[in-house]
Image (cartoon, helix red, strand yellow):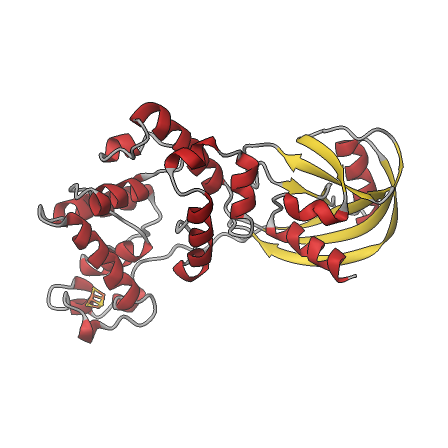
Length: 317
Ligand code: SF4
């Protein structure tokens, strides 16, 4: 849960999640829909899907116990070098390094690495450095101390060097360029898309569809729609998307709401319209399920954050 998300946000989700799925077995045997519903609003849903799959594998391949070695942990879905190192060292006392954003910053300054740590060669260098620095005793504590040093003392903008226990050996401090490290290459421009969706009604029910299990927001439910093409009006884009993706014709009644949402690699402006079903039999173009549901039942399905905003706007009416 803490991958890409702050502790303060994760706290309540963690509590609820552990109440609902207190053991690996309970999580493994739960339906993915139930897991995604519990995760709703936390974002980066691949984490929930991976955790669910990992629970199944832990049950099947490791008799229900989390493996202790980094190599075995790395075979589980959703566990990369960082998580494997953290679990192996902190939970099981294995001598494995951990490199996150905080550790990267500390090591770049401590050893005055003058290249962008996002480059894979530099990443490799930082991991090998972290491994060499790791003591044989209490590697988990050492890793946590390094992460804590980055989050509390070696701050991104104004590192508190006077309070730093490493200040005598820090190369960047010695050269006075700690504020310029780590090196950041120019950021790529984040693409923005305009998306249109329809809240389509028929005899008191609303049409929702389920995204494919893999990829962005996989396995979540949504209101049908898609990206607007250049030169199209919002309404024309919506009619086209619904015809192409769902195979039905609709009449657009009114604009319901507009939601801005940021994902990790792009941003969207999502325009939701209230629509009425006109003709055709709904079918899944790129979804895996499609349903007419009562408005009061919408809360039984897991929706991405931008769609949850649409539901709030519907309720506010
Ligand atoms: S001396 Fe300053 S720059 Fe160096 S590790 Fe400590 S806080 Fe970071």
